[in-house]
Length: 385
Image 1 (spheres, rainbow, N blue to C red):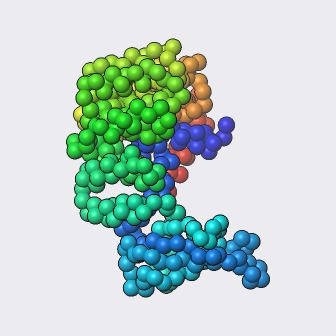
Image 2: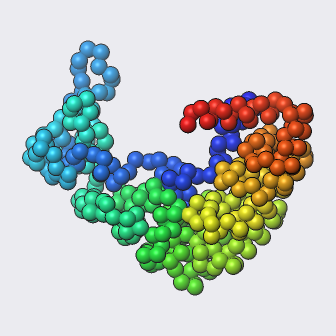
């Protein structure tokens, strides 16, 4: 495996960025949200599509064209747009039934000195317009207040509304999500968690919110999901466990540690426990530090989990397990290239100590290429910052 390929593999296991909810999946945090666009856009209009026209100009890209957009309502007005007028969209959008044309919410900004519709979404219910108006009304409020409003729409019958509400949580930090639980009610989360068709990313978030806001009986529901450990619940493990810990701290942390220490437990379940550690380290690092450090220490001697645990600890700049981590180098269980790389990188980044300095001296003699690779990669990353 080349150095760059190895680095790319390591990056797959890095902690979720602090700018997004680690319970909701990285992909969801990166998705386009119309609500998030509201404060950045110049104008927002609702309307219907007219008959599109294919471009016949010489050299035109196949399938390109224009589509009339009949503006029926301005949700965020601009002097250059008026209700009842037609705006020409510089792209071909199909209209299958001219008697019942698609209806869109379009977002406009000035691009190249010209007002341009740069993104939009087909909507199927006028309720989405009301939702956008509500979303505008929470602009400027604290994130906790805003999330308490969006939580009311998480189970909305309009899937687009429910999706946008979920994205507001996905685009929040772990700390913001945790703070919001102080003003949220458990009823909607309880119903959602019981839905067997709920997607893993949403199950993860809603299970945590239920645990953090719920009642004693909700702990049994969450523990049942932890013990079930099928494909769906395993993917949602971090949120389910975080919720169980929030509801039953003593039992929850004991379950997490017992699971990490049990080599017979599946890798995906144990990896899910490590992902839960990321959540608590992100949202309340000081309060949960001792428990997180202890739990991570259980994963370090495990050759299957060590690269993840070591990488996380380095990212968090937690050096309590330096001696334990360095002691794993050279063991057959920890001989995978990605694990050796993670340990070497941890050593280079760790504060100076007798164990660390002796390890680097040994590495320079026994595997100088690995040490050079780590140092080059760090220099490369620092140069990009």
